[in-house]
Image (tube, rainbow over all chains, first blue to last red; front, side, top):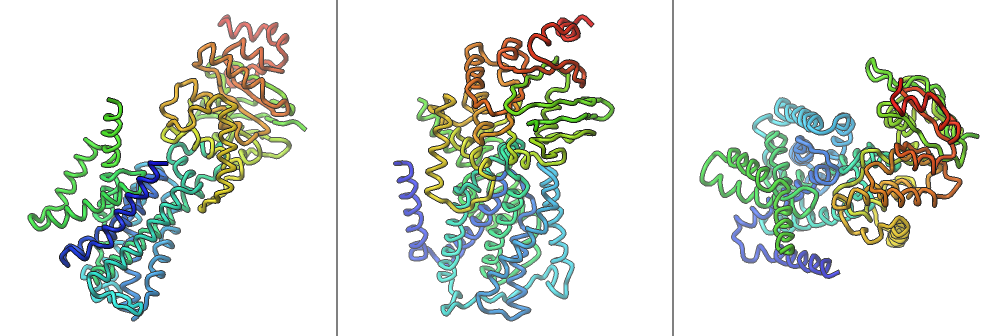
Length: 313
Length: 246
């Protein structure tokens, strides 16, 4: 029970810190924190699939990007300035997941990885090639933020909007992970054949996990389109998918807090290192190698190991 | 009505016949042991019964229902449970969570995304009773990976029993166990309700003869003998196989 109290106290402290953040940070840093929150949600959405269900996807940018493009097209081409573009984007991401899942779920392991990768590249090539709709490589600018009776144009107001959306999504993810459904996903990660023998329709669970994961990625993607006032095909590109994977692995797959921290770290490092050198992707690769070599279960795994070693002494 | 009917089941892996025309009928409540040397096809037969391997030919019926083409989870819903020869558990979950999963599966395996506190309490109590009964109560919060081999084998059986199956398949439940652990497993099986039908692969002759009502002997993918203890003990072909005098 004390452990539970500690985690509640910890969550409360983090929440207070997040709410107070704009008061003592420069505008640039508030914007960076907003981006961290968005990618924390993106990484957590992938973790539902990778860490909980045991399915490593290298195509998660597809759902993120489809949602972002849905927002951009509705706002810029459709003139939808209300918040309606948001649920539409979520639905589009979930629908893409619902269509891709049966194809990807025919395979496991590295084959699953390759199929999800290939599917996301298909979406990327559509965004890249269909110039009349998407402007191709130039992307779609002027994605105006919605107005809910109050403006989201200031950095601080959009930060709070993002905090609220990511907060609600995180609560939903926590509930899913802790539910009997979440327990079944972990069981599937550990042994599909045992779960089948116990009477679980494993495929159906994986399918629902896939679609949920895509929907949450879509929430992140929609936020990111508003955040940048822009979408481009790089939102859908494999680098974006790989970055999400590294966020999850760096933080520690199979926990929600790990990927969120991993995402925050990667976003921060990207910003910091990009101001020094153009070779961010190279640095990202080095981070990945170091994590796999020295902390294969991510930062949360590392912390747990150190704690266990201390208590063993 | 027979509990399990295996009608002329064959299975070829490439050119190798793992099962050739095996037919068996198991009565409700019967305790049947499958004997046979390594490579006899016993585990393959189990896999065809549980749905992990599709037979190349033949038909399998569970309490009158044809299950030959059903997925493993559908068969589980019809009251079939099994253990695995090579321990197949959830290494990184706790013992309690493993049993809760088994109970979830038994109650239909439906998706529940929302907690129901009363239901959770109910399931928790059920799981703890089950663990108590199988001597794993103290291990309930341990991670499965950290259990001893003997405890893991016990958990295998406890998981299979969580759903109160009508037909239980035990694949070498005592393999690799110490004599004391073997005795405990034998006692566990003895305590099971008599209306539960059990088919068991067993290499330990003492265990086989103690638990079995009837015994079926397999060799090279074929059923070569069937009968009670006395019949099997006096069967010349069985003696030959087990003494290697062919």
